Image (cartoon, rainbow, N blue to C red; front, side, top):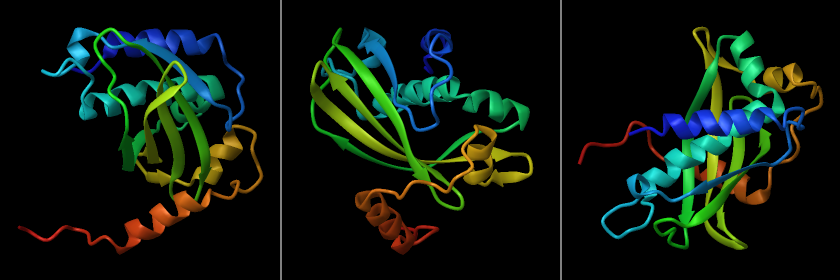
Length: 177
């Protein structure tokens, strides 16, 4: 089940931190509840991605992106993700999700997200996201301009560029098995 209550709480907390730069890091704090965990008593990989969405919504509120999307009648669409799972997040563990935009290209924003227990990184995700409306994908530079950033995107880190390049070689649609 989608964590609607937690999303509401995360959005309410983020409203207190409004005015952050589009390149600021949003931090949300959470706890691993029984409904987040699998039969091994830890948050499973699918739930981690769902919980990371709370961090992206927090960033959207803090930076003003949510308001810009509402004005354009647009929303988020995740178009790709690469995740590293390195540590288990056990039942009742406290953790935080750090979310920061890295930059954009002609179609997508690239967002770095990580989950931390104290000072230990549990996992990290690179998210490729588009802002879409009924008319299609809105260029990220237009959204950045709505947020007061009229300059080009910062240069993406080499590891992000490598991932983008690798994704262009991946066949789509996939071949049937």
